[in-house]
Length: 116
Image 1: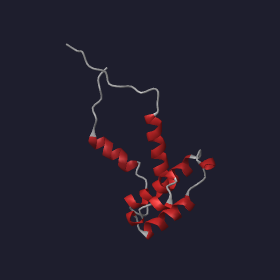
Image 2: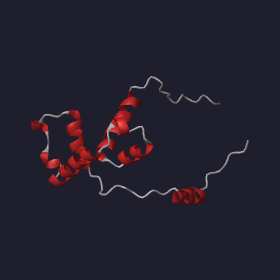
Image 3: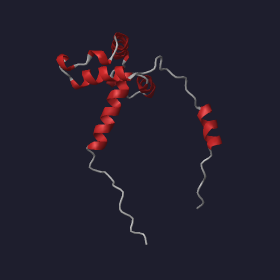
Image 4: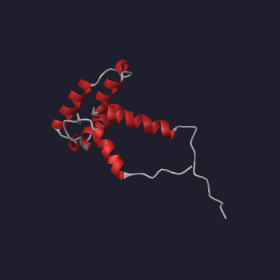
């Protein structure tokens, strides 16, 4: 069986065909994720570095929280796509994926190659 070579030309063509309009209205900043991290971890207010984010970022995250669709609706593929662009959804999803990978019992480590 002959291996098929990767074609960047075909790849870029297919990307353009499947291009979806970005729904991200604003560039996501480290401050936004810091706010979500504080909320998600339940950090005590006395330990929050309020200089690490702006009031605009806080307002944006607050609005994003209200824009999230409920987890009951998440099984609908269209609604899940809408949540993809939500900064809170992205943070929680990536955190859960990291946790799952970290605690997975089905890890596969690269073996030492003894090929002579």
